Length: 286
Image (tube, rainbow, N blue to C red; front, top):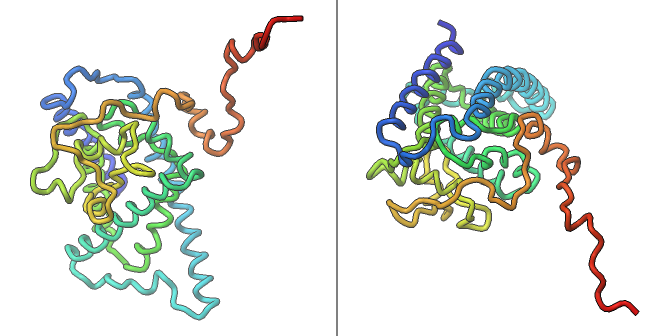
């Protein structure tokens, strides 16, 4: 079976399993299955996996070609000829690349919150107001490109085996779906290492608990504890409201959300009646 069909099979199995867990032990028992935005999140899942993945593959080919030419002109070996850990055991390759990949993702994720022009793309993911397994996939296609392109160079230099990359993708998918799921889970003694639904819910809190947010960990949360960006007041506490907040103007349609980060000035806030009416006189007329 081709690898991409195996990935879709694992996607189906993992999504079905997490969905089942949400029915057995939900964090919020009043949460509807077809909550607002659920169908749109299915669109993002299909669009990002089916179409953006092919676009990323094309971009990756051109990036490698550009890097090979650039390194050749300065007299350095090609990045794809180094393959620093290609002779290591598969389990060692898995550990090294999983840790490196996750740390890079933590850095990128933090940058998505710190820099306004990057936040415009990441804002789509934070428009989720109700978390469940499907909310995992609400991401802008350009954000995915930022992640994959910046992580691809270490992948090429390390020379990680394709089978290792595949299983890292599967493990990451499982942790990501669980951390967004409607579950009340914290992983016990591993709560300071692996992302969990309780921990990640605070990342989607409307209220910021740091200058640019909190809990940036994607698969592993140890980076947040190490660098002081973790927020977890107590095991039983939970954020009161998720999303961007009631005062934030953000489109709800798919098409508008696709292009809004590139043309934010084209979307203007509708005028209110108070803005249309002329101001009242400041004093009695004379």
